[in-house]
Image (cartoon, rainbow over all chains, first blue to last red; front, side):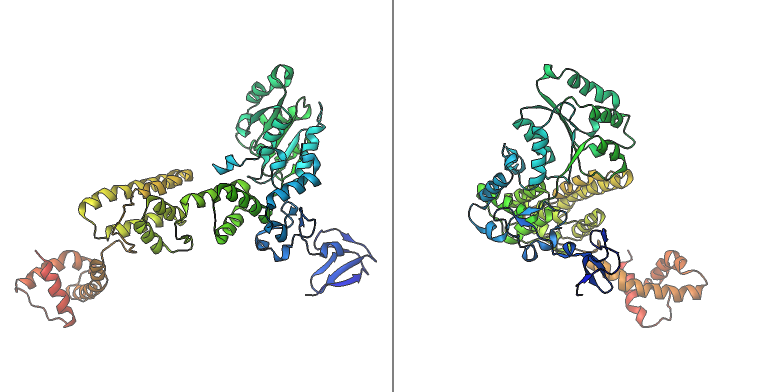
Length: 103
Length: 385
């Protein structure tokens, strides 16, 4: 199925977030599927807490067992995971990005 | 246990839920009299209790820990908490942690929930509640009185990171397949993942690393009796997740058809009957928690170098063969004779047939029969004493 970027002629309801799409708003439409916000159409991916890049969820070995909407939103990418002392890097990054935790 | 050994010592040592941890620390840091209590919501094993424990330790509070059963009764909750809430200075710096608060409702709730809500509305000390779910309508009244922080399951890769660290510290190794199996099997539950990993590493998996979960009952029963050690046998037995009745039956049919000595049989059969009794009790009382003892009873069947092998049927092959094929011929014979004698087939088989056989054996009776019956009748005559 292909999603087409359209300018909304009529108001609609996003099939992902269930919120309204107003007239003239840009949305994604597919025949027989409905409409969704542009933002809701993006492939969800977790962020790597160490390097700050995308965690590479589509290629992750656990992709079928990981509910991206449900899990804790920061993960670790394969590159950072395979480095030596990856756990220490994770902890240091957490402390750096969330200084309050490091009390 | 590894899950205890590697329990984080600081909030910063925990893994995942960084946002939630930050909010939690913020709440604790800004806490003053009257601040809304905190409700930690999340699936089991992701660190709700650990978070509360660590906060108490790091913010130097004396944690009073309660669970749902303590707060079911109004009188009991007042007994425990009134002294703490009334004169906190005498008791150091107390804080309250109520675990599994989603379990206090229901038939066993004798006003405890109401009393707890009253306390939550006027907090004089930090109060933290933990619940697995918050969607229940009955949690609504509690939710109104608290600030909620959601803890999410951990992404599998983060679990893998933590597990690898533990394995490195323990100088232990797991095959990539088992590692992935443990991580995915835990479904975001850190504690369950650590426990499974320890079970694997400490020999709860045979040296062959062959998974018995996918094996059929025949292979499992054979693997059990062929096992080289009790641990291996136990692992095989525990991994067989089928209906308990089928499990008992499989062992019964295998044992009674085996060629073990009478003495061995005398020793083994009471074990099976013990297992059967337990299963009967479970079915009668529906106390399925007792099921955990079934495997331990069946473990007594294990003997090294046992000759017992799986058998689907609980009768020996010669007997089964005779029942199936000879029984068919006898039934046909009974049907013909019943018609001739104007009686039912069952009357013929039960009352007439033995006498007819005896008369034929003594040659005092001669019947004109099909040739196909000769063999079977001769066989039956030989069995007469």
